[in-house]
Image (tube, rainbow, N blue to C red; front, top):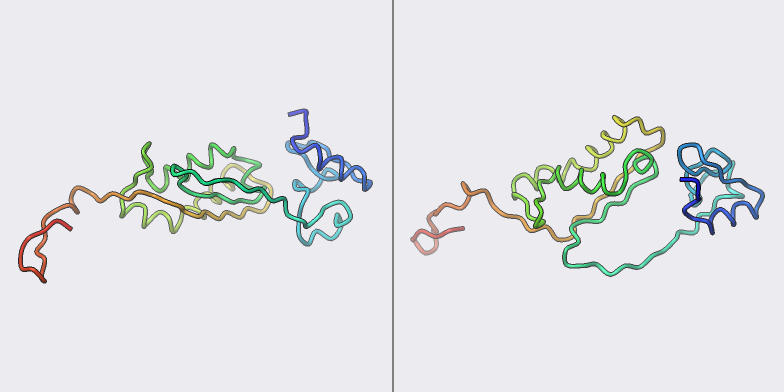
Length: 158
């Protein structure tokens, strides 16, 4: 895009003597792809460490929170990243997933997403954190069999 998506950040950076230029994505002085950072010494006078805060109301349909560094976002759109996570953990259109697949895949989905960014040739560091909020897990049909309940001595569905 020809328009900087965070114009207020561009104005702040230019007011302190820096420049915001586009090399595939917007960059401070043509180098750094973020305008807020911790510990970037050479650009410390242009880049601030004060976080941008935003409060949102979670909806009952929200499944997870995906937090990632710019190394992911330079090669994936938010929609692509969400679709990747949903597919990896087996979420269907109703937000349901198989218990076994979810338990197995939730342990590796962050590293799988990082690997996908590397495969897409990300040129920046990649960090991914996923917080699963509310996932409706359903059992395999093979799990839904009657098993003896030892305490009652009769069959029941677990």
